Length: 189
Image (cartoon, rainbow, N blue to C red):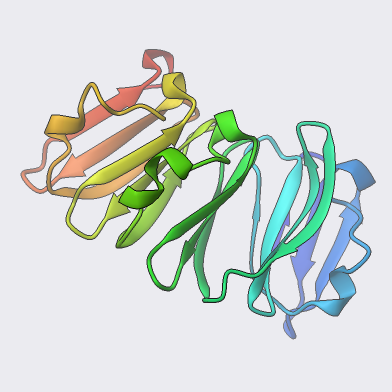
C-alpha cells in the first residue's frame, strides 16, 4: 500500500516495512519508521501528517497545524480502522471504541461524546469533523460544528442509519427506508 501527504509518501513493503520520502515537514522523514511493521496507514485530509497501525500501536508523524510530531500510541487492543480530518485522527478499536487525537476543534477531542462512542461500527470524516456509525443505527458526531460536527438539527431523523458518506464539509446518511439525511455545510452538500 502507498499513501501520500501533500509533499511526501509512505510505501509499505510486503514485509510491513514502511519507506518514507519527500518533504521532512510533511511526513517525508520519520527517524524510527524502519523499526516498524505496518498494517494500515492513513494521511490527514490536508496532507500534512500520517498515522500508521504498526506493531500493535498507532504511530503518527508529520505536521499537525505547525506542530511537528513523531509519537506512538498504544491503545491496548487492535486498531480496525483509521480516519482523519485535516488536523486530527480517529482510530476505531477492536472493542468498538473510538480514540481521537490532534487539534481539538478539528475532531481531535472527542471527550464531549466519549460516553456515546460505544459499539462503533464505522467512522467517516469531513475536513474538520468526524461521524461514528453505531451498531444500533445511531450516529455520533464531533469536531467543527459547521463541517458536520454538530448533527443536533437532524438527530431525530438519524434512526436506522445503514451507511454514512462525507464531502469536505458535510455528511450524508442512508437510512433503512432508503431515505437520505444530510447535515453540515450547505456549500459542501
